[in-house]
Image (spheres, rainbow, N blue to C red):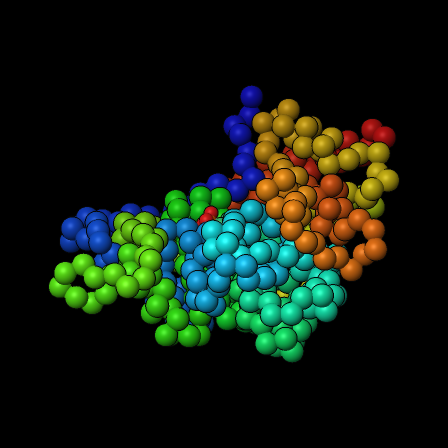
Length: 378
Ligand SMILES: *Cc1c(COP(=O)(O)O)cnc(C)c1O
């Protein structure tokens, strides 16, 4: 049996940068609390993304949660949220007792549809925030979304968990919104084994987040608390992994882009398959290469997933939209379509293909051949 091929797995630098920073933490006994690696990791993320301020956290989910706190979310507030995403985008809305309204996707980037967003603003007044996602590392139609949100004076929270390093008009995803959240979970383009980062132009708000996530300890010799706190900080050891990983991020993006291009080339003569598209002014990080299979194709996504599974190769359906999830199904969903939805169609017709940066070109060519053979047989 072949060695398992993963969708995306941790990939440490060949140079061992991560271990150097971890060793520094050990040598200075800065295992906890916080320390040099955490401060430097925040600075280095700012230098790379051109974000103004950053707070390193234990998870991307924690970053999204703190973004909602930073916009002063209150119980019952309405939050517009992209439906086609991982549940971690929407869960923090629930933590705060706010009310999500899910917004459909468009076909050009698979992200939030500006038309559906406009329609949602016609229906709801006083929206607290709009949460957009750059799915699989492909930037959303940020220009149009920003314009609409500005007109309605509503802050944007960018879930850039999957899109670190992806740019739009040369500017980094995560730095368009009032707040941006990155994830360093094990499957993301770079990882700290687990971790996240919140970025924002507002120093005052990021300072406040630093305060909340270290148990909201007031500056006093005794333990004084005027607000509810959280224990959401990233450990200094893990921040060391992040600093090492950041050095190879551009290499990872290059490899992910090659993977995307090789799939594109491999399927170009199969009209039933199209790659997840992106805008001309966008540079995706191509975290995952995803394909769309025509509805009337004889070969459907499950056929592909099962054929790859037989060869010990991991692939997955596209995220199941939040408005179709039992936990969120009572909440409103806004689509520009009269019937059905684009996000549902992308879920039903999409497949995420192996995009592991450790995958060799030969292995990827075998994967392409397995899929091509399916289409040859019909
Ligand atoms: C991974 C992910 C998150 C959550 O990040 P964690 O670091 O795992 O908490 C949030 N949103 C999206 C779209 C993700 O893919």
